[in-house]
View 1: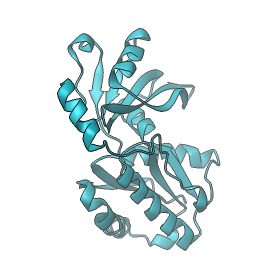
View 2 (view 1 turned 45 degrees about the horizontal axis):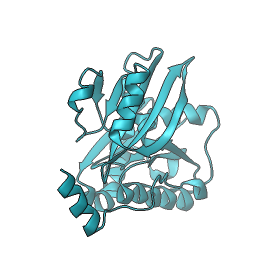
View 3 (view 1 turned 90 degrees about the vertical axis):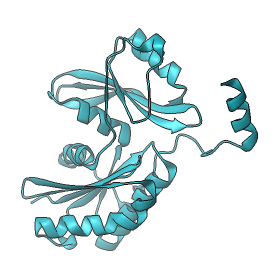
View 4 (view 1 turned 180 degrees about the vertical axis):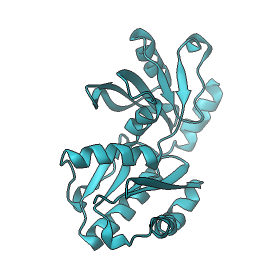
Length: 229
């Protein structure tokens, strides 16, 4: 019987979820600084709650990004440690896709442009379409300005799924949107679908999805941005 663990740490809200005996267990940790210290105790707590041991796991899934550099790297490290130690396959899931999964509450055909704050006046975004029982990528995850994404959504008449901290400018206030962040519960749901399709991979394939190498502005760049505002 499938017993699947999922970890999501691409934003300030870290979460873990476990599927066992047709039941989903989950826990949350708030604050990036708590991710590395809190993940393994949270996982252990879920295993105890579900009444199983870590050796009974079938596979490990995780939100591979894009998202906060430290958070995604932390999830990758924990997942690789578990997968290598227990000889388990892994299931990397795009964190933006987890947002679409959360927004598609009716489970019917629908499309979403999912957006997460990437800092430095940029966002991560992707366009997904749910049809025929599966998600289809209409626009792969990318890094751009928020205005470029909003123009794309407006041109194609698409609803937005926004991460926390993103506010629509006046020119785009008419766009429909919901606010939600990636969560391990949705990573788990998506990973279960992939597992049934045989899309699991070896532990060394548990790699983060990085869309930029630079993770902070220089002092000069911050001063320029401040003067523009």
